[in-house]
Length: 100
Image (cartoon, rainbow, N blue to C red; front, top):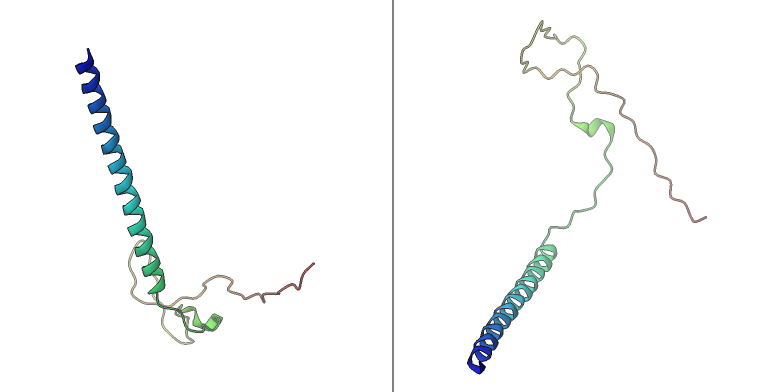
């Protein structure tokens, strides 16, 4: 009877040790991940002073006066970048409020 209780106690202690080892491994893994994350954030390149974009910096090819246009009936792929209308592009000034 006592031997059975001792065996159960040994099994319980072994399970507790393995659980503690898993917790310790998880804690070490989280510390390593935190250190790596901080190192990656510290080594990120910082953007230089960026100027605001204007509507001409959009990079959309625009239609030129006198340029030939391709007209396709049906489905087809056109390598010509002649955009006639690209939607209503506009800017709005950002107003900073000084409080309430």
